Length: 281
Image 1: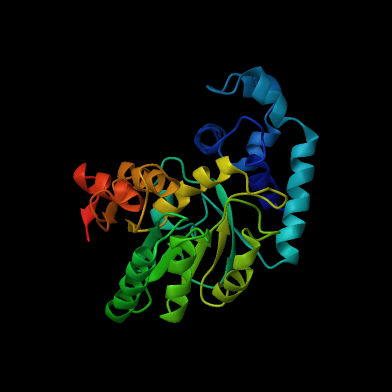
Image 2: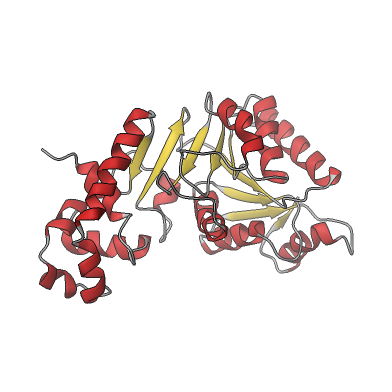
């Protein structure tokens, strides 16, 4: 019997089918295997599919790639979480564009009692790094077992992960590429260290490069898997503001540290507070 995970992984590899359309296919046809088993003329009649995407679904290369990915995750002790499974994180499941399937390597509870996401600029100042460290240190004393989520990027992200490790808190990095690599490579040692009581999470299969659009896409997971998103430092534009906006759209709490008037590194945070999108810390 074919491993059902091949169809579940394959569903995420169809050109033109994102998470929302994949959900629609599942609601219409029942499960991932049924999507690939359905005849092309009937697939074309599913709203949003049409002849082009139906042809993509029937391409044999899709399931061949999925078989290779399954072999990769089994070899590397990686788990995959499928939207219909009971162990899929509850907070993330509530989000309309949550990944139909994601990969996780590590050792922590993705349904921990309290989860926060800490994000911010890659060009962190001493002020921002100090705020991140003191916030996580204080929270560790108040909420033992708190799970800290970030993106392993330069600046505030890596500071959040390392602060969590120093405070003996589990921490999860959400990646913008496959689990066959670590980006940036200079953060590899931290990535390995957080596997012991945290983990690495991505909805991208192996072989995926850390391209710019992927960082924006992964932000929905950072926002959706946690109770709240905390923006430490951000310029007027930046990925952390995208994460904050997504969290706000999900109805999640957003918090931010204010910065000095006219400080470019805090303009984004000050704007979030002024617009009542974020509570002031």
